[in-house]
Image (cartoon, rainbow, N blue to C red; front, side, top):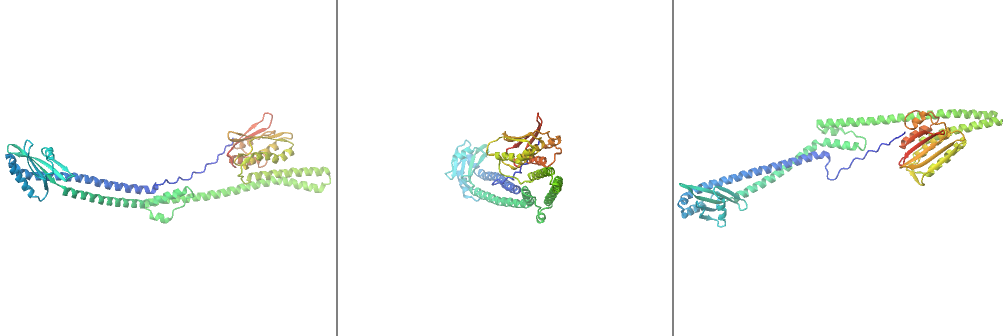
Length: 479
């Protein structure tokens, strides 16, 4: 069985999706983003650590302040002398040079408020809620609350609480944080931009190589100019030179392939010319002999009839050779195959059938209109097989062409009453190799066209004598 497939054309390269960077630019862009993210992240982490350290220093500042205040009011707390404690707190307010107090509280050991001095807007409830030694920062109001238990000679003498104004410190810290953030964003962006630029420059050879390989998918690869190799680093230049060697090698292979194809074409044309010369020489020699005989003995009716019959047979032989050659090398037809094309085969073959004294029968179970996309290849195959069947069928026999559509295929059967195909011919026709032995070019034409039609062929012997050749041609076949 002969089964030939035509390779599918390669798919065209997919277009780049919108918004997606080319592969050669993704690495620089990703590196720039990573550098920017790392720089900003490390700065934010450093700010968090710095803020915690600043909070601890504010707490230490409050403890230092309470050291002096506790020493100043200890005697008044032990004596429960509110006037003494108030006078000491007023003096502390008068000596504001560093951290400014907003409100000072003094409590007895049992938690009762003994003295309050300073901003009346500060609630004593906050001072009470602090408990013993404690620290709390109210960033919204810019106040640091600090509490200390004051020890006396016979136990706790009371507790002092200070509400300190740290808003200038917090404001300076905020300004510093914003300055650091803005400077960090600028430096991080600059570092990311430099990283992207450096990697883009380093990746330029890769981008050039990717573009060259993409172009090579649509056309023959083009070697890169030496100027591009000179700008690349040594390792990238080695890769680009390897690509150039590949491009030059493919060009050389294409040149050799084209040259080999031309040589094979010339050889095929030479073989064709030799075959035609060999096939034509014998009939021409006979024709020349017949003409010479007519000139010399044309007056004799018997000699004249015999010579004319010989001339008729010689011309028929030449016609078969020319027909087979034209069938093989006729230009491809693009119009669809119609039922009338198969009906025309009867007219083309009928003269050969009548000359042989055989009956030609066409059984076409086909609809009117288009049967298959291409007409030339199918007609050429059937014409050659019908001519061969007429040659093989003895006088009085029958040659039949049956055609129908089955499962999306055009099924054609050519039946004759001849002695049957030579095993080598049948093997060659069904795709098993072998060499045709029948004279003429008809079987070679059939084998070649069956391959281009992607068709299948089978040969069976008829019970009463003769051969049936069955062709299955896909409906989309085109020679």
